[in-house]
Amino acid sequence: AQSVAQPEDQVNVAEGNPLTVKCTYSVSGNPYLFWYVQYPNRGLQFLLKYITGDNLVKGSYGFEAEFNKSQTSFHLKKPSALVSDSALYFCAVRDMDYGGSQGNLIFGKGTKLSVKP
Amino acid sequence: DSGVTQTPKHLITATGQRVTLRCSPRSGDLSVYWYQQSLDQGLQFLIQYYNGEERAKGNILERFSAQQFPDLHSELNLSSLELGDSALYFCASSVGEDGRGTDTQYFGPGTRLTVL
Image 1 (cartoon, one colour):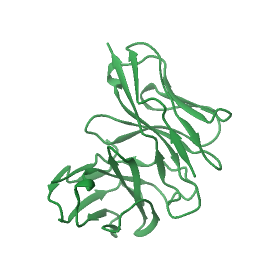
Image 2 (tube, rainbow over the protein chains, first blue to last red):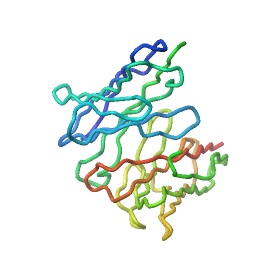
Image 3 (tube, rainbow over the protein chains, first blue to last red):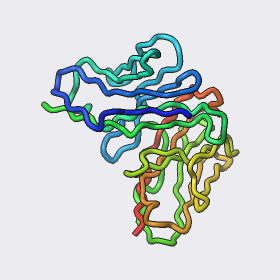
């Protein structure tokens, strides 16, 4: 079965410092990986996805993610954090197991990012 | 703004009641997905419709049902509501059936359901 894990419930970063939000995955075939962000009382906003190709994926709002097949990781990164980046971040993998729920997103538990001035 | 709209934003009802949540996908998108977000279960996939037909099913209770209409909007019906059904219900849409799993799903703002 496909799954993702976000090992950190919360990440604290000072404004201007680089940030990393971790995600590891477990899939039986090719991994299709996604990052979403949820601001308070808002829906999920798509940041970026990895389907194939370059291991460094660039996304919205200056975020990027590094796909590492050997470590089965897809960590989200940003070179310089902003206070406005404070939100809940979700990693997701597409469920490609053959069966009734095939093709849909399996989400991690989420990581709360707090950026302090 | 993702282009996916959901109504109502908030819904407060009592146990045993029935409610209907509505979703309009992005213009041109044929697939609609429903997800439930709760504190204990996290984000869970409920059901997907593609061009009016049920495409995939997740952890959806028998008390819940959905449909997608010819104009592609979708409704999620929740009946015999229980306290544990209180959650944020998201709708998402994508352009195609996404059999390859590569399409991006764009999410609406959600409907917060509170069952008292």
